Length: 88
Image: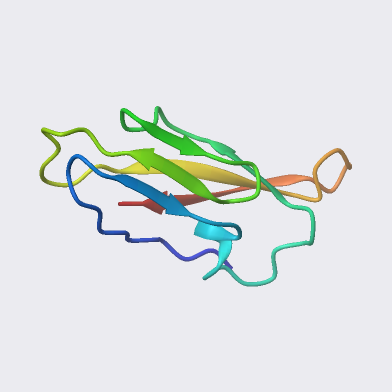
């Protein structure tokens, strides 16, 4: 089961969310699952395959930024599936 994520950051700062990052609140995700973009990321945001995030928050950032990512459960196998999730 995947659960949406919500993270607060401050404009003009560098934010790091270490692995498992956006996967920490999801359940029944296979070991070795890979995370990839589903939509275009906000400016300055890097989503790592391990679920971690690196974000150079723009100085003029305000409001809400959202993106969707896909969890590839059992990548490289016939059972691989894309589970979508939303982070704001």
